Length: 257
Image (tube, rainbow, N blue to C red; front, top):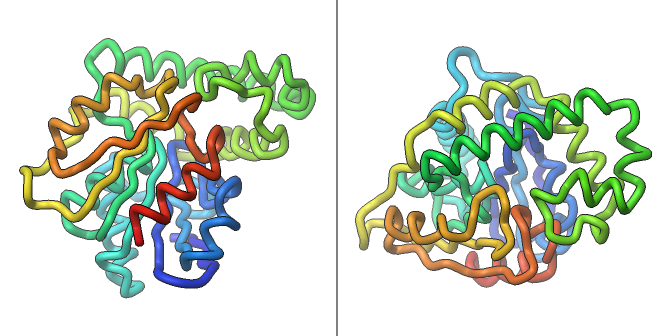
């Protein structure tokens, strides 16, 4: 499993979302690495890590990360995840494979129609990105078309760095396991939780304007993980490290102190 290790201080595992890679954390990487030694991995089938042999699923990713942590002497490390990675760190916490957890806008707490909407909208977005790949630099470079392209993911896309957005979309297009993992997430059952009093500290960060994992899903996340607490990000969509990077860094550092 490819990974980047950088920074100083206590070790902190970073798990990216669907289609992303270790590079997805670029907006907050430097700020975090001044206080933590970051281990940012490319999950199997994304970035520079080859796909898994066999079925692609969240549990298979959790098995792979658990093995990675064990082989690198990192079992019990504090962990942060975004989107799919946020769901993954909750699964790792349930298995007691990691320590303190910050889960940023996790999937896995959809109702049936929300899960179907997630699949259709994200599938349409990646299909459009692939069809327009040669035009993406111009489209993402324009604030108007960037806003249209990312309206589901951020409440203020025109403020995002076009370079950062373009790099992330190219990661989605290049990820060999994107389609298989999207299909799995769209058809998997709800995230399995853990009884009260059995978990290390968990903080679930949620953007109040998330249009991928709607804010009302936070109640279901707390029902599954009653030891967790919710931290709300105002004027924030699905990726807090995009929309409110400084607040995201503060939450991560405070929660893993």
